[in-house]
Image (cartoon, rainbow, N blue to C red):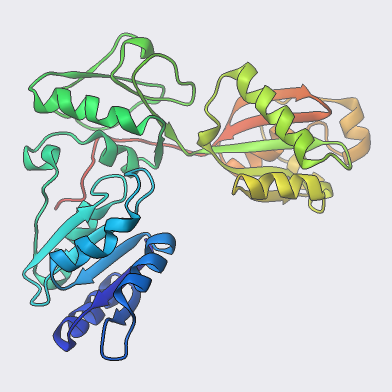
Length: 333
């Protein structure tokens, strides 16, 4: 987590520096020739994962107010008083990690973490914080309150998971007979009206002709997602053969989606274990019988999930990185 600390007094600055030794980040002083509050907040709100104000909560509230947009995108904001007595999450307690950050800051300086989110205050399961711990994307942020609302009302919520979940199930959470009947689901293939949590564990294997444009890849990718029915939000990276590492269209396509791309030589792809869809033509051109499936599995270090899917001169496949979800949702000792 990229942290940025802002202090307002010499005492606060000393505490900020001490905290940054434990939870690294930039440290700035406001006033007395230091940074301006408004400009610092504007810059750090856009580029940092967490803003830590060492001072009064009111100052922080006024500073961040113009920039707050959504719990899905806003950074964590925590206030620590300059005496180090309290650590108060102000924004993005769950998805942004502010509650957990407040606990860590409290541990670092002896402050009491003041957690005010309703599920935490009542000792209940927080589905959005759990999603973050499992490295999942929340598809429908607005439905978080439906799950939390049921638990706060004393009702049970039903879940469905494509993956086995280790550990003791939280109180108030029961399995659903099908994804369509679940209040929330952990899945790569969302269906039904519940909240969908998508683990970011996919590696997209790509095969394409020389000179394939980014737009051609985009069109083929949209058709791939539609026909297979998986959530593209699961993709963490892309992979192909090293013959494609200078393909401008493929590089642009990956950059647009913010995927790191791995390019493997044919001999490495040939050594990948598994059952793959062979092609004599691909073998004659690349020296390996299949590019997209083998490259995806090689880069993921896991298993093939969706086999070779051709269309528009492009082939896609999807492999999954190892994934072992469990029911813990707080880093509380």
